[in-house]
View (tube, rainbow, N blue to C red):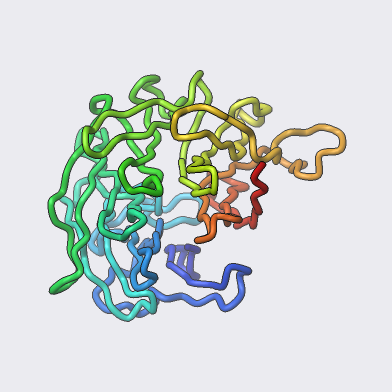
Length: 307
């Protein structure tokens, strides 16, 4: 996703190396043409789910971004939509009340494509994890929607399903009660029981499952052990942990300023955020923000070595 000339985000497709970039939502019939983003591929490659701002909403413009509260990832005034991979057709999957504090965000498909999970922001500014069946006929729609609040009414953000589709990773402040101290969890979908995978008071978010020959690993962003920058805002790097909470390891050193570190970013702290893992699990495309205020950044190709 990237902003157009008016500052509204659009969804693009591209080759993994960044070539062949194409705006696929510029002319999608029926899809609201305000903010669009936080897209996620269906495993079949036929569809993309995304969040789209309601067409009749208007918010303030901040830092060059129109309708700032509806930016992709913020979630307010967003519904979930499904589009074909070429952007020629669209279906509205949810229709939430157009209330300032409500919206849908961060939808992810299960590995078999039969389920969709997302975060639903509520009127009282708390969140609910929702999981639904994804049904393709007669037209794509959601059915059998289930709601989860494993630790009560707090902040919840889904990460991704485990490779067997039986569990869902998510980040939440259910224990710390502070978004800036969010932790990573894994929830069994049959029982709704969750397990905390990260400890302490570091800020952890965006868990994504990587399938390896030795089993699943979970990549997430964290400000653990990071240097502090302007106004005590840390940078974040990527870390990994096993689904049982063992084996925690650091994957990147972008905010570590030390002699001989080729990864170090010499400017202000940068934020490693969401990742998209290749189908073979051998590398990822990771998003990096160089300004949280202006919401600007770039994508980075990162290859894995398994020991």
